[in-house]
Image (cartoon, rainbow, N blue to C red; front, side, top):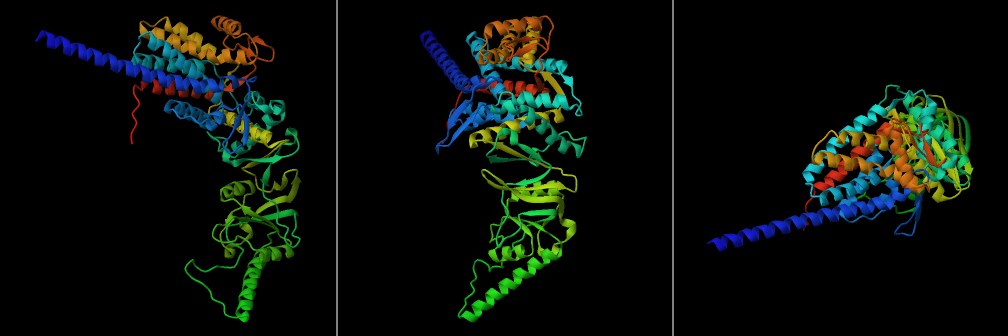
Length: 532
C-alpha cells in the first residue's frame, strides 16, 4: 500500500513538473517571438534612425522608417508577433506617432519579464506589479507635462517638427510643420470647443515631379482627376459656380431581364434621336441654372456620362470633371459648401459651391484640377505633396500624416512633455525611488519595469552614433539631481538640461499603456491551443 502511494505521488510530481515545463516553454517561445518583432524596428528609432527597404510580393519597393508601416508589411505568423503588430496599429490610431517607440519599449519589457520569470517570480505577481508601475508612470508623466494654448502656434510647430525630424523629409520640416498646424487649425476654427479632429477632411494628394519645397496647401479643393476636353471643353473658369451631381448624364437603360429589339433602321434612328433629345434636355437644364463647373460622381450602374452629353456641355462652356469617387463626396461638400444633387429636377443655385477660380494644372505626373478661393468658409483642406520620385512622395505622405496626428493629439489633450528620452528617464528614476518603499517581489518587478524604459534613450544614443552606456548614465544622473527636462540632443551629440524637443503627452501615455497591456497579455498566456 505504501509503495503504491509513493508511486502515485511520484507520478503526480512528474506530471506537475512536465506541466510547469510546458508552460515555461510556451511563455519563452511567445516572449522570444515578440522580442524578434521589436528588434526589427529598433534601429529605426529617433531622428538618426535608419530606414528599411521593404520588397513586396509583387516586386514593389517601399522605403520607410515608420514603425507602423514596417510592421504592417511584416508577414508575422506567430500569434504573439501579430499582437505586437496590432499594438503598433493601435498606437497609430490613438496618437499617430510613437509607433516605433511603443514596440521597442514592449520588447524591452518582455526582456525584463523573461529575467523575472527565470528568478522564479510567478506571472501573476509580475502582472500586478507592472499594472501598479504603469499607473505610477502615468502620474509622473502628468506631473511633468506643460499645458499648451492652441493659439501658441510656435509650440504646435515645434511638436510637428519633432515628428518630422526622424523622417526622410526632415530637411523640409520648416515648410511641412507649419503647413500641418495650419491645416488642423482650419478644422478647429470651425468649432473651437472641439475635443478631436477628423483628419479625413485633410486630403493629401500625391504628385510625382518637382521638389519637396513645391508642396502646397490649398484653401479650397484639389482633385487628382483631369478636366474633360471632349469637343474643346473649357479647362479654366473664373467665378466658378460648381455643382456636384450624383445622377447619370447618359440615356436610361432597361432592367437586366429586358431587351429592346430593333428591326429596321428607322427605329434605330428614332432611338438615337430620342437619346440626343433626352441628353440635350438635361444639359439645357444644367446650363439654365447658371452652373459652369460640373463634378460628376463615378457610377457603377451605367455610364455616368456619355460622349454626346460631354459634347453638349462643351458647347455650353461648362467645365466637366468626371469620375469623382463616392468617398470624396463629403470632403468636396465641406471644401466648397455645396450639396450633392441626386436628380436633374432638383438642380438649383442654392446647392452650388462658389469659388473665384477653377482650372486644370499640368504637372510632371499628369494633370490635376484646382479650385481656389471658395466664397464660403472652407471646412476642409487639400495638401498637394510633391517629390522627385514615387518612393519619396509616398514617404512624404506618411510623414505628413504623422505630423497631422501629432497636432491632433494636442487638440485632444493640450499637454506637452520634453522629448529626447526625458519622459522615459524621468519615469524610470521616479519608479526606482518608489520601488525602495515597496517590499518583496513587487519592489523587484517595479525596478525591472523602470530599467526596461531606459531602452529609449539608449537606442536614441546608439542610433545617433553616441556611446549608449555613457549617455544613459549621464542622463540618469541629471534626472536624479531633479533636472526633469534633461534629454539627449542628437545633433549636438550631448545631453542638454532643457530639451528643445516637444512631444504631446498623449503620445507618451498611450505608448506606456499599449506597451504594458500587450506585455501583460503575452505574459498571461501559458498554452497555445490549435483548433480545426
